[in-house]
Length: 367
Image 1 (tube, rainbow, N blue to C red):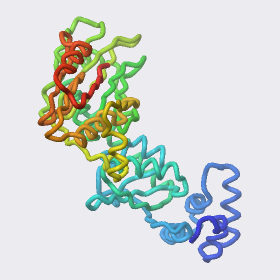
Image 2 (image 1 turned 180 degrees about the vertical axis):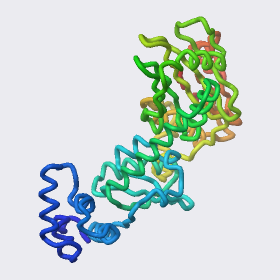
Image 3 (image 1 turned 90 degrees about the horizontal axis):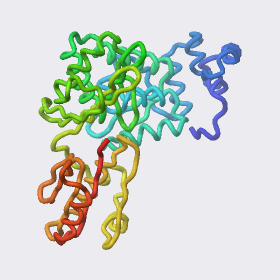
Image 4 (image 1 turned 45 degrees about the horizontal axis):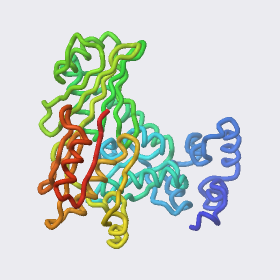
């Protein structure tokens, strides 16, 4: 059905004999007290129609695939594909995947911004979204369950050793780029940066603060007695280099852990949403005597984009040199230079310019 020509949802339901006018009037009366609820959700909440029949009618009216989504329909780990905060904000849950096609259920497929937000996140992971619709209460119930289980997993860890290990492993599983461990007045907040957004992961008891600080400093090779800002590194997780930064605030020491995956696979530009148009790519990146600038907030994919561009431009007949702080992905055939306390950007750049370069990548991610 053409959504621009259909009538209000209540009228469409009456036309199909799903409910009668009295039922719709009851829903509209209820909506006056709860204006943020949709009529279809109110009809479902008041039990005015069998929910299986109602959700099928909803799909038919909107010309969408519909499902009465329950926890049993979730065949994947939702947080592996979109963060729980993104899911909550857009009322969307990925629930099944086959190959590169992923099924996502929304409470409102007419919300173009929500649909496009989730679609683009999944497209950047190389996935094509297949859209479904269900009732908002089903979405909310599943999200509450998922959020509770994620927090319980961290809070159930015993001593500081197990707690920090669980926090890091959970972040890795959720594909987080950063972990924030923040002392508040009466608790400790743990947040993950996923798909560029900070999302709450757990709230820990304040009495665990000294143990957490001690453990983080021990495994990141920091001075235990020093409370000024420090930088460290955790190397005990085989596939990851983890940079650690500490900074004291009014409630204690805050830690930010940056998760850097070793030997990360470089993704093609088309996988990142760039057009599959060779001429457009050449005119954008493959120019002589030009500069390409990539700028974006933390966790939005700057590094991924830069490495994908370099991989696209890399050929045996050209000389590519990178000057980075730090080198996050090692690429065979490239001359990669890592900045440190003794080797500065300016000095490195002067030297590289004498090395007959065709392309120079400058990348700084120091915090």
